Image (cartoon, rainbow, N blue to C red; front, top):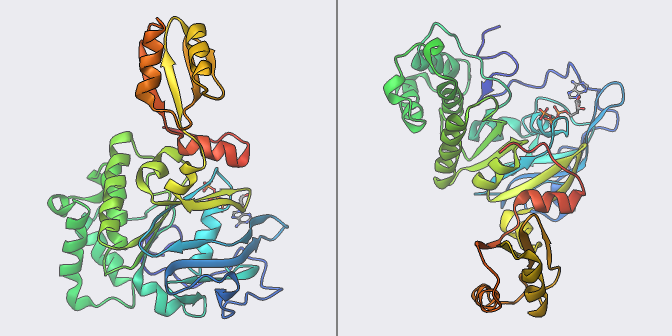
Length: 352
Ligand SMILES: Nc1ncnc2c1ncn2[C@@H]1O[C@H](COP(=O)(O)OP(=O)(O)OP(=O)(O)O)[C@@H](O)[C@H]1O
């Protein structure tokens, strides 16, 4: 099997389901049953799933009754800890694994029935890239393209060149893959998803194993691709990453979707607070409470309270007026992690 086609290769043209690991289709995936039951338009949304469920042989429910809606044009962060069902969901969306029940549509096409119409417009990167180490980046992409029966060999030179330029590897096109840094390898994998015009990119943990610099590069690249109008569905277990890159987020936990919304909407659900660094934290709390701010407390030389409708500059002025030595003063917006903890009541394997 060539590296370009073996499971786990970045694939703009995933192979048909092998179903080596599926429990068959006892209840039958009703893929042509429209996803209308959710009332979500498959035309306006790049991905819609309804009750999507995957139970592996042995009874393991990897994905449980998933109703996912990814609007067109979004950078949708599919967030969840290890083992929460992200990859299995992505594999179902790409027709690589057959759902046990439920339905899904990609770019308005039911999967798997309409997969041949949807996939040419989808670039997908699932798990680790697999390229020939002794070939150049350009030659690897050419081989990769040749493995896609839908691609046109007459335009391969131009398309490969454009994809390499797009990911910033134009100058390194003639370098052997084995001489690429890890960041360059990830970029080449993304280039492989961009060998044709794509309406949707599906990227499974595209920054896995990258150093902070490489992570930043890939994040910037994803934003650039999205700015051109491509919808991006990207899985990650890193909250900070999703927060910096995505417009929308869906949070998975043990196979279930516990939240999905635009990031701004999720954050809006948690009120901002003020944070005062001072050696007079006890006095600061008294002043804050006196101003009517709720939840004023202090610990380790930091006084905090809910901001409410109060004007931060007035709070700061009042503290100084009352003789509190203000060393630091900030309005703290809740991070996605705060929201996640509030939603699920749990911590998260955060890595910033
Ligand atoms: N082929 C399989 N057979 C049996 N169980 C599986 C199979 N693939 C995945 N699972 C199980 O399904 C659950 C979800 O796995 P999945 O890989 O979808 O999670 P994930 O969120 O992508 O995790 P990670 O972030 O570690 O990649 C896990 O408990 C996993 O062990």
